[in-house]
Image (cartoon, rainbow, N blue to C red):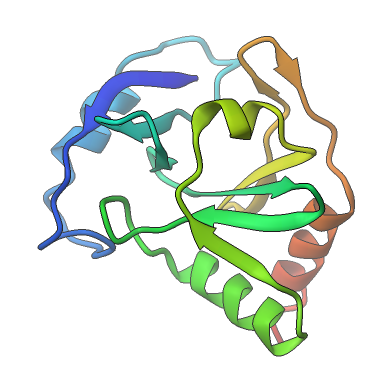
Length: 147
């Protein structure tokens, strides 16, 4: 689900986990369909920031991309662990602006948090995704505890 609520820039809080995430709760309340597991949040300019309870990753032209949390969203623990593991392995990861149309055209999309690990996105609007090699790699890293 792409949430209607848009996150305003909040540089003083960007990336931080804190207990005042009313916007995320409001966005989470936008749907009741049990077939929808997560909602994507965009900023006021239409760039993907995060999920209501997750960080977002995409595989675009065989490169892993995740939104920069400097303008909003939470820099999650699982996101950081995956970024560290991939960087240590010499795998490039682009931390940059990710537009919704680019996400919809990605080869793979997945979301992460400390509770769900790496969760493949199966559908975004009319676009269906199948878990690919990067999603499976992320799941293996999560399952292995980053040892």
